[in-house]
Image 1 (cartoon, rainbow, N blue to C red):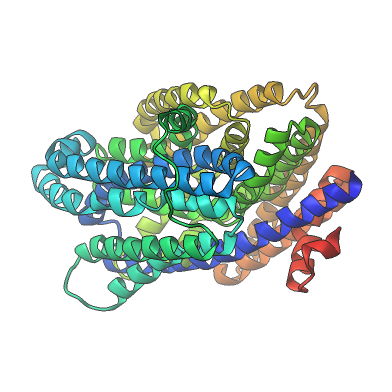
Image 2: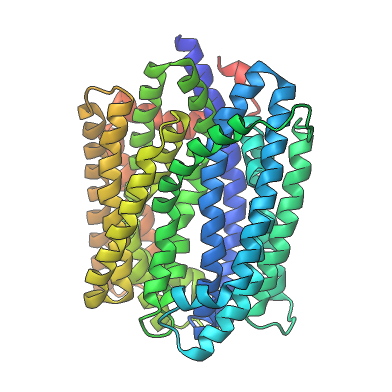
Length: 526
């Protein structure tokens, strides 16, 4: 059993590293794209319009991506265990149906674009609403283009072809960068065409990659309504998890249209930076563990599910809590370094930095929503997700109205963090019950140790910054030095506070990465 657990950890560790590397490349390109966007458009009204117009199809795709692929993987693995031909046939039927469904949704969205803009952009003046309608009619095509490859993501996840799966999004950011660098005279429409063409290239790559991973587009069995029913009964409740993780950003954008011009863009920039560690690390972990815990759930291996859940929570805290401390200290400096150029001035950097700090306060809870959804999907127990997703939207709207009255765009970010905190705490105890965990005291004890070490990071950072300011050192020198020293203080305190569980998490991030770099196979780790 011990060798089996070590082998599983090795497989998950290696998969996580592959995903992290691909995600890191993609997010470096994404940050480059944001830099170019900030240089060219700053926090202008036209960028507000684009961000809002994109948020509607973007949110729809994100909702269905997590929902359909999470429901598809456990079913596909069950079919494949019985018969490869059965798996290919059922999957091909579902892929064809998904393409048809997203084509219809795109057509409806095109016709209803004026009504959609009137609803989501109610705070915009007439000229900006007119521009939003024109953009929406183009960007709504993303629902069909991107939606068509959602189940292909599930196929590659089930086949554990993580390299293909997480390399595909790179096409979008590369295309956007080309459109922003090359002077095409398209102005804000450079972003529109960049997303459309880049997403088409990504979908084409996914279709080819799924075939190369061993999947065959074959229909050897007649259409089975029971399969479709089972798929949707599992998928629809999964909307709840995606509502929590993705739809609240669109809600924030909609409500930010009531604020002065630039509010939507400020939120977007801050969210993208805050989202970077989630996309690079947390999604890598949740994506890597999903097929494995799906297998454990199917075989009834509750003990291993409990163990993975505990280590996932501790690992989240180990990674996200110190990042929160650093963002609270240096958020404006991060924004200035990444975005302050061209049309993006120091005032925009200040507001965006403050908004980033407010988002970062809830980073642990935001990260947990992805892990939470993964476990509920693997357990095929998703009804609670739908209910909690709807509740999260109502909470976010309520807190937005409350906090934006006092702090404007920063209040919207505070609202998101508070909402994520309430929902995540509720979900942790709900999942504890579903997994049959009798006590969380050991996990909470580890999180308190991590929080104590992160407090040391924060205090060290403040002291170094204050001393450096008193000594008159240049900010460009003492900020990176203070950040590094504060991080070292965190690692030193963690070393002093460490428990076997924390040590195991550190091992995942060090030993597994080193072994993967050294070319050791999974067999070597067993």
